[in-house]
Image 1: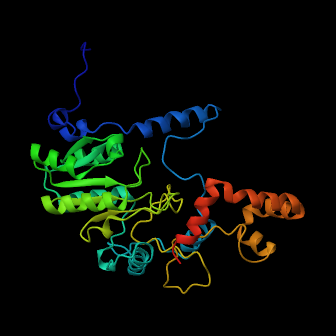
Image 2 (image 1 turned 180 degrees about the vertical axis):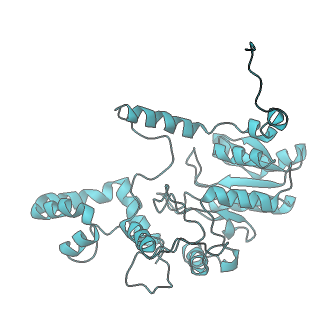
Image 3 (image 1 turned 90 degrees about the horizontal axis):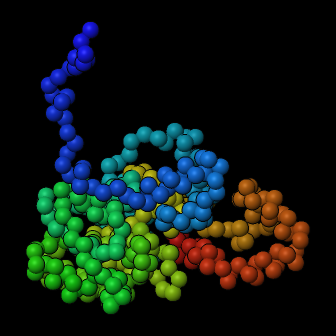
Length: 337
């Protein structure tokens, strides 16, 4: 018997190497923390999850019910590549109602999550090696996606003097050092939570136009604001590229809507209409029995509260003071109608 084993095969297998760009993509630390937390929970430990940016509320009951109906009726096949026509039209109409901007349905593209939207936008706008300005601190996945696509993220340091957001001066300075091809901003921002004022967004949009740069605006946290609504970059630049998502405002972080996503949450609506927002109705509309039927999982708690009327009244009085209730209230007022 020889002292060393003879290789079973040789040749191409020995030269296979991962792409060089893969080695330059840093791990997304949030996912590492989530994996460690899951390991602790599997071992019986208790974890307070604060590692990912997502609402604490569950997906609205009407969305879950609509998804179940879609599965029951076999709507699981391919759909139009850019999204179902009725969904694209409904999203366009939402931008007119919520922001006062005209968006043609033909400009709306529905992707499987906002990350898919970023990938398509970067591929459509930038040549390999192009430089795109992002803020530091900022969402780390921007950098990873750009590097994976052969693009160069240009992290520009921001601080309290600029409200942790990119400004025209910072963009112009980076462009003078070495030409940029685009600018990416986020408002409300992750991880700072900063909401850019309308004039700040308009100033960045004007500078991008002046320099001939693509302006991409990440607006997935729209609706999760308290003092005032967030402003879309489309109000300042009709050619801006907007990336939005159902995951945050509609509490669908574990979902990927994809090219269909026609979730009908109201039986009174026609079959070709799309309802993307389920208003929280635990304490609104109809009799107590109606509310209990709409929320089967909460029926026992609701009936218990109604049997103890003083407790229910006090609970109802305290709800408006809770920030979570304010978010749900705004969700009902500004969501899709």
